Length: 141
Image (tube, rainbow, N blue to C red; front, top):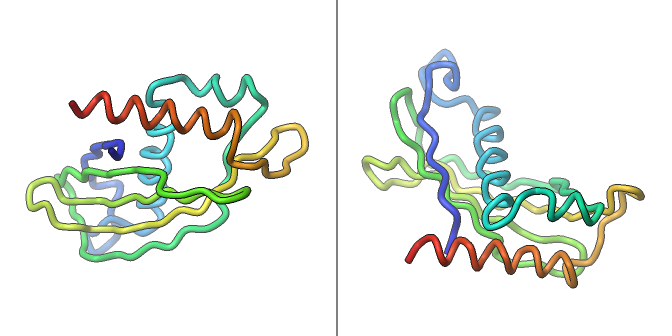
């Protein structure tokens, strides 16, 4: 089950045309990912283990504009991991219409905070994501 974050579009999110600016989507995506990582545990789980997160790339598809007053429902879910990278899928929907506004795939790595080097997505890292999955599944029942 994905984690869900709802963000109301405010005037300051928008550009001259009254649409959410592309840079603001990145901020909203980051907020939703932080909330996802906090699900079922505090961020201390990661920092206590000397681990952090870095974004390696984002593929964003803008489907339709969003304007002030719209509630955007952002679903966030880790879809896969292999070796030292993982992928988080994020979809923005207009809550009123259920239409997709943005569809994004975020490639990330978990790093050792001392060395800055990526670590394998197994052991404590996999256990952390298992806790997140269990918490999101439990909150949807």
